[in-house]
Image (tube, rainbow, N blue to C red; front, side):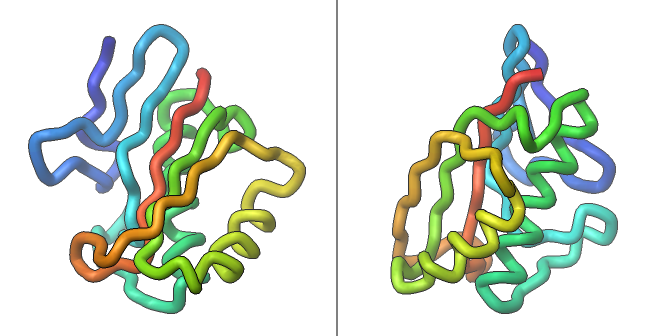
Length: 124
C-alpha cells in the first residue's frame, strides 16, 4: 500500500492521504474546487465547483498512471439536493459515455463553504 500526500501543488491538509494505492486500485480522497497549481479556493457556481473538483480527481489519477475512464466509483457530496440537476449536467459532460458507479449524498454544509466534494475509486 502506498499513501500519496502531494500531487503537484495539491496536498492533504490534515491526517489523511490525498490518495492511497493498494495493488492496482487508487482511492482518491474528497476533492473540492481548489486550483491544483495555485491552491486557491475557487468558489463559484455549482457548475464551476463541480467541474474543478472532477478535474482535480482526474489530475491525481493521471499522476499515478490512471485516467477518468478507469474510475470505478464516485461519491458526490452536495450542499443542497436542489442543485443535483445542475451537478448531473456537468458530470455527464465530464464523463461522456463512461458511467462509473455513483452515490450522491446531500449534506447541510461542506468544509470551507464549498457546494460540492467528490471522491473516487479507480484502477491503474
